[in-house]
Length: 325
Image 1 (cartoon, rainbow, N blue to C red):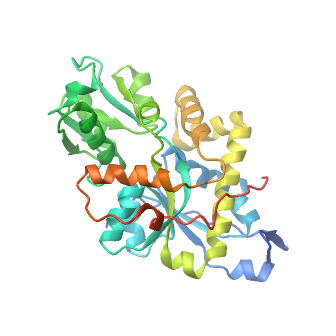
Image 2 (cartoon, rainbow, N blue to C red):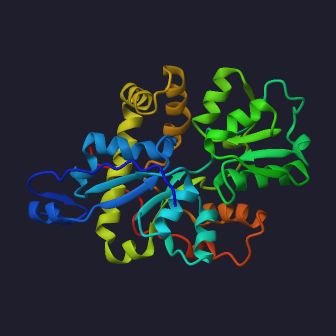
């Protein structure tokens, strides 16, 4: 399996720390195995992982972290299946599909409730002006079984027909749209912001407002790590949601961080902050109806015999109580 690998380690804080009633001594921290977190590095909901490392929040929470950047959610799940990742950012239907193939994992917290910043986009010169016109058309997605794939199927349902989903990879979405190889794309942030700001594309449907809560991204842990290292899962989530809180409370810092991390223009960084970061869950709360709505998108893809929503997640780690940087 080929992935883009970016590894960083959290450094343990000196002295003793306390989290959720667990006393952490310096020797224990020094010998701790890192929590291996995986996700798409330039994807907004994953940025708080890197921010938490930079702010020292994982160390303050008492956990070592090793981050690996993958090409997308499907690749992240492949990393978990290969035993390379303990905690990843993905989409419930993808997790259900992986479970059917023997990858045992559990949703442990929510990222965003609706797909903020996710948009169905067409080229600026496209004659398509309404979603119903996409019936029978070609829609670019990143990969089969990805979040973009499930959203494209939802578009086809709303359009009243079928659509041809064309896997292009994240880097191929915008060039293929501009070249006219596809009629539309499902653009995720920050690609949607970049395409809109450049003037090369226009928004046909803002999925963040058009869709009901369906958990476009969640944090998923392997069942093995949940069973064997629940305290580390809890600590990792504390670091993550503490970074989210810090970013929301410090917009100038957050926008500058986003700009530096992803080499965005100030305008794109601001859009990423206002639309994506500000839309992230504050505490990871999960509800069965949200998971069920998400699995409903998987059924559109023809996934059969999906697990019951209640069996796909646990609430033992949420709501998360953040700590200060």
